Image (tube, rainbow, N blue to C red):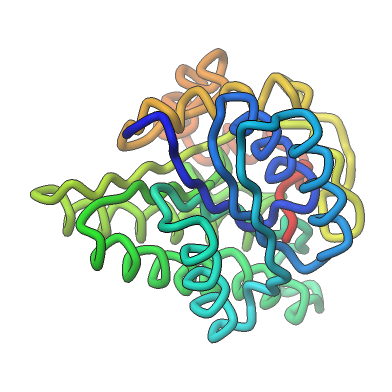
Amino acid sequence: MGERVNILITGASSGLGARMAHEFAARGRNLALCARRIDRLEQLRGELLRAHRNVDVAVAELDVTNHDDVFGAFHHLSGELGGLDRVIVNAGISQGAPVGTGHFNTNLAIANTNFIAALAQCEAAMEIFGARGDGHLVVISSIAALRGMPGFQIYSASKAGLATLAEAIRAHTLATPITVTTIYPGFIDSDLGGAGGSGTSKPFTVCTEKGVRAMVKAIEREPAQAKVPAWPWVPLGFALRHLPLRVIAAALTTTPSRGYSA
């Protein structure tokens, strides 16, 4: 991928999305930023342009659960920047409740945002990449996708579904110049409120800057998948895959960690 790279990030108004925008801008990447809170995006755009005069930044108000708007926003921003080289499917929410505890609507919102809306983003991105003949699709999954975790029930399921979707898209595009990357972040202490996590601290939690720096470094390599930060999540990810479920259930609390927000 050339030096002048145009990157679209959803869920960019706060948390990991906003921090990724700063990291990519520092690398000279042009940005197309989407989120529901256009005022936050405009503020972020101003910060990025003042700090990095060599980049272009376009913004668009977008609720990713309005699927038609996803296609419109992606094509509009592609036109503003003269094409998209990379799309990062980042928008999501992380609060949830154990299944059967009377919070179906909350869990449904997580499933809709983290999987169905992510599908719309993948569809829109792949339309653009298919027309131009190349591109880099990145989906932000989660370490919680590796196993069904007691405090992350619908979040784990939605992020696992997204990871499997990305793998299927990757399988379909293996013989093409289109690259698909799945990022599995560990516990990153993002600055979310509201739709974010509870704020409960977890073992091995890293600050936003360190976590996102590892994410961006991995994304720039364009691997098929990456667990970030690599330490300790590569070995812990292996353990999560292979430990008995009763050990996983006993080791994890029932409160979701901080996550991602549109």
